Length: 154
Image (cartoon, rainbow, N blue to C red; front, side, top):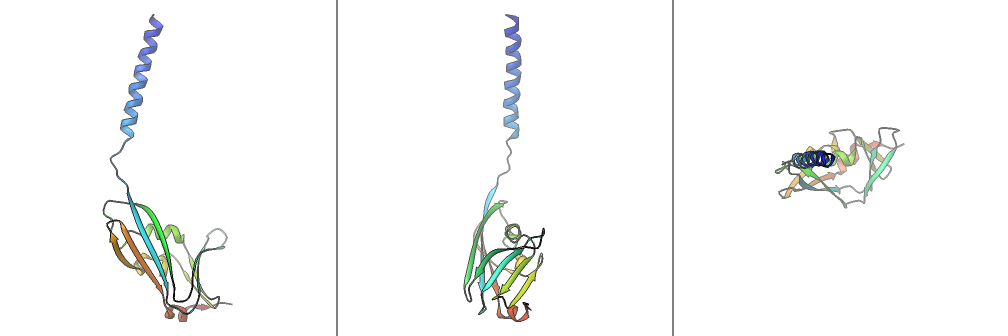
């Protein structure tokens, strides 16, 4: 009889510890879904290729293309606090998407490189519109002036 009682005591101690662990691992942090639309407007008469340059071997990864005088819409979701600030809520999502240096090519005629916090890599260069509490639209416009100032391709 004694071995059965000792076994039950260990079982009860283990069960109580397990239940305590389960309840202690619950946190009161609430995660909210952040939705961001990134609109890229091509205000030029040239087709735009928007690529990321990988840091490992400087290969380019095409992210999207925009025809002349057209728009590309990118919809991203992530996590946010209860009340994210519109002017910087999408910065993390944009950074994850771009991944560092961005190459913008205009019809293989000219190009622009944007490092971190430059051009389309900086959320500050986007026009922001609040669509709801955690849903924002960021608009970036490629202009003819950008094309004119771009570096000629070889």
